[in-house]
Image (tube, rainbow, N blue to C red; front, side):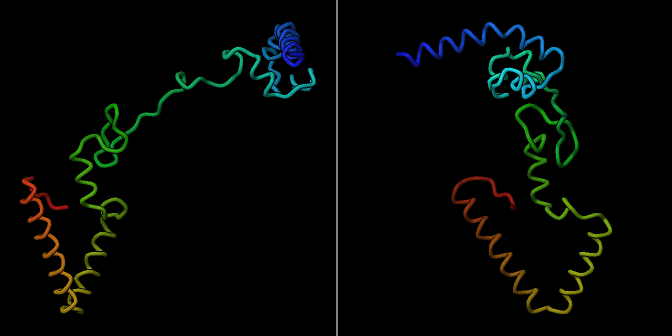
Length: 152
């Protein structure tokens, strides 16, 4: 019971000092500087002040930076974070190499791939067969499910 009285007295004490604290804050003093004057923490001062005087912007007042589609560059509609449409998402995910390579890098990469393909024809055939088998397996699964088959 006596703890409650001390707490209530402390609250009354701080409420009496509140106009002085507000005037110091309006003068541009920081919470730490005001806390040193009244021998308390900066957090205590922060909690006493009304929201308008705490400084900084409220979350609702902060300006939002415009967001753009990572594939086509159009502004994003609400509730979209990376792509403006499902089509842009599918296009980008199906062409992963387009994300980070310039045109010269793509041409150089293709040259190296063709060169490797000519030097290793057996391995190339094996890789190609594995890819075809996986593609055909996906098509069969899609037909069983009754959906439209899309290459992934």
